[in-house]
Length: 123
Image (spheres, rainbow, N blue to C red):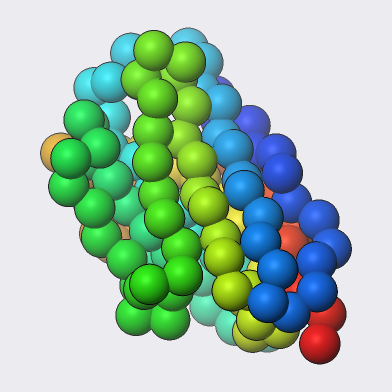
């Protein structure tokens, strides 16, 4: 079983940046695809960004394309989400997850989840 712990969330003004981290333990990290998801109050969880086992292939949700970047360091067992140009609509709980697929782009692909970290963007 893989344990995932997110960090790096917080309060930021619109237009600002944050970098989220997700540290994995308990499994062979490089054998999993990874993803970031978010859920805002009153809304369904949505995919933000995903990356393949090597990080060579990525997928982004339409609302974050060009602003967010997903990356991973398999030696450190960590996946990152660099978020630039933040907007109030980006306010949500951000969670990371892993999939046994090479590149998962839907939530049902993912088997282990972290608890999440809160990101709040003020206008």
